[in-house]
Length: 147
Image 1 (cartoon, one colour):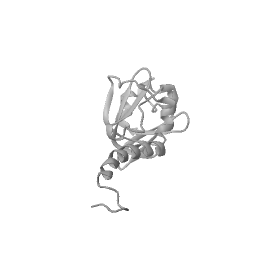
Image 2 (tube, one colour; image 1 turned 30 degrees about the horizontal axis):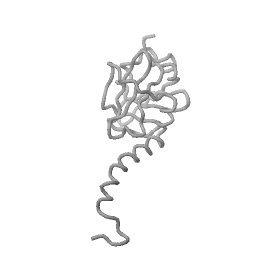
Image 3 (cartoon, one colour; image 1 turned 120 degrees about the horizontal axis):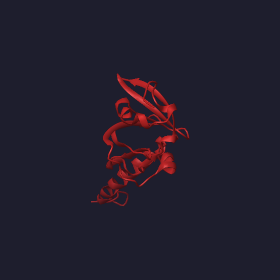
Image 4 (cartoon, one colour; image 1 turned 120 degrees about the vertical axis):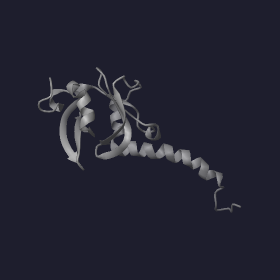
């Protein structure tokens, strides 16, 4: 029985989809993904060269196994899994927009921070970056990488 001050039980059921939609949108705005999407948003499908379930960080905010990373002549393709896709439009970042690099290690895991024009940083596992490193512009390529 619901009183005058209590919402009916079905109200909670309506809120569940809203929460799963609003929370990822808020996270996308907080991490800077929305800013990246404003510049590099794309409806392109992932190219044949891609890896799913990749952990990453966008401006320091970590996403565990939520990213699909692809690469093509056009650039670096990034898209999120279904659960966090709201607020995380797929991206295609042209290679020339990747302007710098910082290699780090965290908990014994080798990571690469790729600086994107405009100030955002994408941190990816070193072994993932190694797959497309030859396409990166010179300032973002590791020392000793093939040109």
